[in-house]
Image 1 (cartoon, rainbow, N blue to C red):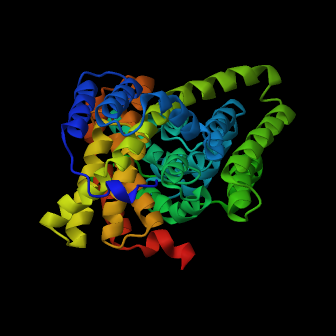
Image 2: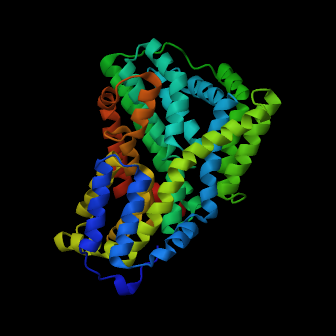
Image 3: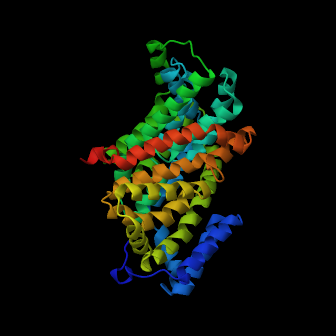
Amino acid sequence: MFIPEAFSSAELGWDILGPLLLMLGLFALAVPVWISLGLTSLCMLWLTGALPLSLIGESVFHGLDAFALIAIPLFVLTGDLLVRTGLSIKLLNIAAATMGNVRSGLGTSTVLGCGFFACISGSDAAGAAAVGRITISRLIEQGYKPSYACALVAAGACTGILIPPSIAYIIIGMVLGISTSSLFLAAAIPGVLIMISIMITNAIMNRIHGYENSKERFNFKNWLAVVWDGRFGILVPAIIFGGIYSGVFTPTEAAAVAVVVTILVGVSQGTFKLSDFPSSLEGSAKVCGVIVPIIAVALPLAQVLAINGVPQSMVSTVNAFTENPVAIIFLMLGILIIAGCVMESTPNIVILAPIMLPLAQSIGMNDIHFCIFMITALGIGFITPPLGLNLFVISGITGQPVLNIATKALPFVFAMLIVVLLIAFIPQISLFWFQ
């Protein structure tokens, strides 16, 4: 986001701090996020005079008039179609055939199934709901405690915003003016590392509590048969990744092609009727109806913060205390984890990314590296109360209390935190493909 030099040394006053405190108060009162951000934006614009209030409509329109944003409803729609056509079950079968022979086979294959779904939908909540409905009862039958089975799926579904294609990377790329394709490429290894860390944690918990002890042996012939049966399910992520990484498609175009291919497969196999399409569109619209208004009202807020030099003020304030890169990384990590605990990823991205990017740049952090670090850190918030979205999704499906699930999810939180620290201090994990 462009920040005029004339405002780079602006000092923060109550015209900035007052509206921000108002925003926190509205959040504490459980006022909807988009209303809280909208009122804060209007209040700050009025007090600072940074932009005429008559231009706020134009600012919102231009902020949303982005080709990349079209990918969000398309990826959500692809995930919904995947469930309706039954391809999601075939992907989970492939995961089970691949990992079912290890000691914690069902749990590990569940996490892998979450990763497969993340490669298509770009949404963690969608993955939690889709995979949870299919696997949680199986996990309980295998010997997992209900609350732990819920926590495992909730943690695995965090890969929804960490493994590309990811809605979060589309949004942060739009806000910071970074290529979405580049972010998808950089996020591949970190996203897989998060998934592996959850698998390893589950294996350790199995050793401690003896939830599961798979006796099955890997059968290559059976694996080939399952993969062949689910070949059309694999085709969808292959089109998305192959098209984006080969340069044939933009992420938006790849999402559109994935929607068409999924519909054609469902119709040809008799698992989807064209008459079902309107209800799929309705489901996608409901998800986007939550995300897009937040982006719309948060963009003017981010713009007025930039014009008033808030990012530069933050850099100056932090540097006045320390210029140690390690200390600054831990400070950013703490802010992101706390923010992820109390607010959804979309407003966090739109508000915090432009503010924290200059701080990251001040210690020599690459822009793409910062984006991967930020999204991965925010991903932890999906399984931490009080606003862990995956916890509420799984609780709604199973009836398990949110706090019970959150308690069992603590080992996964620590595992993800270790990976976040590795990403922060080893830039090559994110920038491997750009070297």
